[in-house]
Amino acid sequence: MTFKDKVIALLNQGLSEKPSVFLIDLTITESMKIIVTLDGDQGVTLQDCIDISRAIENNLDREEQDFSLEVASAGVSTPLKLVRQYKKNIGRVLKVKTITETIEAVLSEANEEFVTLTWTAREPKKIGKGKETVEKKLTLPYSEIKEAIVTITF
Image 1 (cartoon, helix red, strand yellow):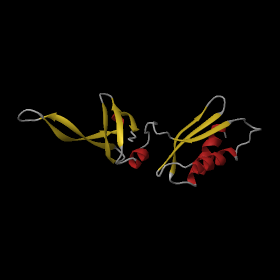
Image 2: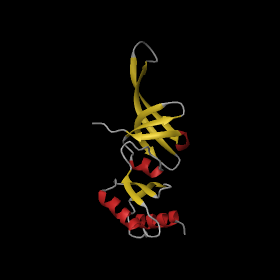
Image 3: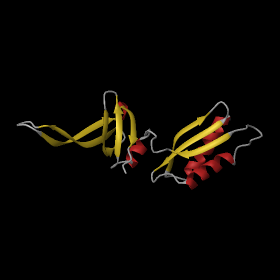
Image 4: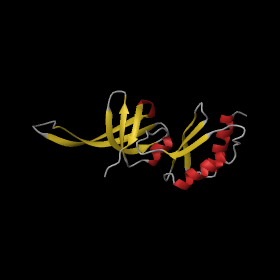
């Protein structure tokens, strides 16, 4: 079993004890730095990071392979990668980049194939002068999303 396989097995075992926490990214550099990025259905606590860190670190032998370990939650500005992340952020404002445009809208629906975004826009009236506020709705498959980031408003 390779070093990476051991880390993956230990990580999966640690995550199985915390069903609301899930893996976003795992990187093992050439210098054996293990970087684990987590997210959770109700967020990630410091204790979640500590528990996952211990699940990995306490079961690897530094005599066999020296390594460093970093376990962290996905940051606010981290792009969404998994369907599970989209589902947990329903009702929040996303900044979504597609191949052709950037849209800032409320994530109103997310399923296994697509997301639905809603927003209001000012458009010229169909009859007469002036503008009117129009409700816009866009259904977007995940394959067309280049990047989606939750926007935080204060």
